[in-house]
Structure formats: structure tokens, C-alpha cells
Image 1 (cartoon, rainbow, N blue to C red):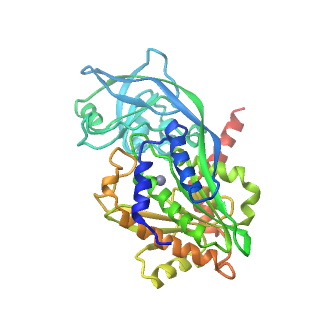
Image 2: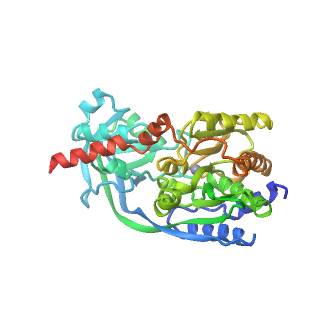
Image 3: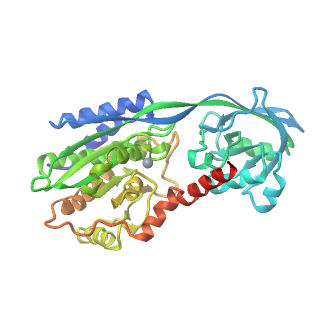
Length: 429
Ligand SMILES: [Zn+2]
């Protein structure tokens, strides 16, 4: 069988619609993948799992002094509700939340730079601010050519506390600061809901080493406003083509193919899969993840969440076969993480867009920037690399997630912080 970029591109086009975790569209994409698998004569399952989500009913931000204007904002998912009539407070631009900013934020509604991750969130909580605003997009945006992203106060953040929060376009934040806003009113009302998201799974039993399993993973959900063809329809169709190869060329070890839902909401699909299939993980010797690809301008990378030996093995394969792939031992924020957390090492393949030519997590993630040749090229080396280990007489390296990678995984999953949050909660009792 020859790898066919055009066939991949066709499937990519077919699933190139917004498909957020837990939505009808995500399920529709799951069925497209399932049908594609079944057309090869295999069976595929759609495995459901529950996710936590949020519905906003009201989100408002109004500058009261020294001028009056309402701005378009979105509530942070899971943010604490304000009263129906909102909260009024002094406005303060706390920038990057230095100690000086922390000292100046008490009782105020503050604006901060960047994405509010746990570190920054804890500083906001510590400051005694009564609400916060963060920005999305760029200064060049207009209401018409941009989308205001909805951010989320994830459970790892909420473990420490919560408060009302909204996101605003960067150009509007600019206007508020430049015009010297001193007093604002913020209203945030919403509620937590449960949705059902789905993984799509299939497998081909190995011929003579069937009890050892290598799994292929790619998330197929997208973020809002994004057709998610680069992130990660591309990985989804790359793995589909690899599956097609193994239908015709039976592997010695068992191969599993998992397309994960709700990755964008915090690796929820792979976390659910690992939890539901915990008993079989002892048989999983490796995981191969593909997340973002197909871009015309870009560079391929392999991030190996495994031992130095496994990293050298990957690098050596690429060199010997003449593939330009930057190979590093490192963690990547994707579905390999829950596997590593359960002792299964992995490699994530990523084709990062070149500076100024890569669009991710917004309306500009569209098929125009991708082409079949890049999909086919990545497919070729991921398949070559994977097939060599899958058909090896003895697996080429030990199944181990070394301590330096375990540390990165624990940091990524905020394990220390979660233990601290649990301790603080205990002390409060
Ligand atoms: Zn992704």
C-alpha cells in the first residue's frame, strides 16, 4: 500500500468543522472516523465518557468612571457567579501580577496579561481582588475579524479557590487602560453541566507477539471557532493512513488506534481511556501520539516522553532514513501525558507551523494553510519508525518513564500543587 496524501486530505476536509468536546459535532466526527475504519473491514467502537462543562447565561463588563461604556466579554468557564446585578469595584491594571501589583489589587477588579495559569491564578487569589479580566487576540483584531475566546478556570485552579472572571479582546483592554478606567461593573452568571464526549477505538491483533501492545493516539476534537484541521484533524488522518497500512501488513505486536475526544478541555479523552483500560496498560509497551500537522510552512518534531535510549532510537531512525525531524526527550502537552502517568512511554509527533505561518486554537486554523504532501511525509516517518519497533524481534528499548520525565509529568499535572490544595482544605476544616 502506498501512503496517499490526497486521501488523507479528503478525510481532513470531511471532518473540518468545529467539533468541541461533548458536542453533537464531536460525535458526528467520531462517526466519520468510525465509518472510515469500518470501510477497511475492521470494527470500531465509540466509547463514551462524561465531562464537566459550563453554560454562560450572563457576562457583562461596563466601565463606569471616568467614562461609560459596555464591552463584549465572555465568562470564564466555571467562574464564581456574581450577584444578578453584578459587582462594582475600582479597576486596576495588574499587568503580570508582581508583588507590587498584588499589594494594589485588594477589593478591585483587575486586568492581567497573558493566559491565567495556576501560578498567576494563585497570585490573583492571594491579592484579594474581587474579579479578574484577561485578554485574548491581538491589537489588530476587529469585532468582525476575530473571535473572543472563552477561557476556563479548570479544576486544578479551582482547587485553590474561585472568583468571577471574564475574557475580553486585547484591543478593548487596550482602550480601557488607555482611557484610564477607574471604576467598573462586572456580571458573571453561569452554571456547571455534564456532557458526554467520545473516543473512537479499534485494534489489529499482532501475529506472533500479540500480548505486547503499541497504541496510536490522536485527538479529533477542536476548540471553539476553529475547524481544527491543523489541530488535530491532521493527526487524526495521519493515524488513519497508518492503520490502513497495518490492515494490509499485519503487525507482529498488537496495535491499537485511539482517536480521543475533549483533548482541548484538558486531555479528557485520553485520561478517560487510560482510566477505563487500566488493567491492560501493563501490556502497553509504547504509545505514539500525533498532534498537529499538515502545515505547508513548518518543521517536524518528535518529543520523546521516555528514556534517553528511546530518544536516541527515534533520532537514529530519522537520521538513517533521511527524515528531517527535530528529536528531543521532553514532555508535550497532549494525550501522551496520561499514558506516561501510568508508566507507558510515548513519542509525540508535531509539525509546528513556521513563525508567522502557524495558526492554532482560533478561526485561522483552516485547510488553506495545509497540504497533502506534508501529511504524507509525516505519515511516512511515523509509520516507518513505529513499524520498526512493532515488528522488532525484541522490543528495542526498555519500557520506562525515567525520573526526569516523571517529574515533568507530575509538574504538568500539578501533583504537588494538588496535594497542597488538599492539605489547605484539610487545615480549614
Ligand atoms: Zn492538539
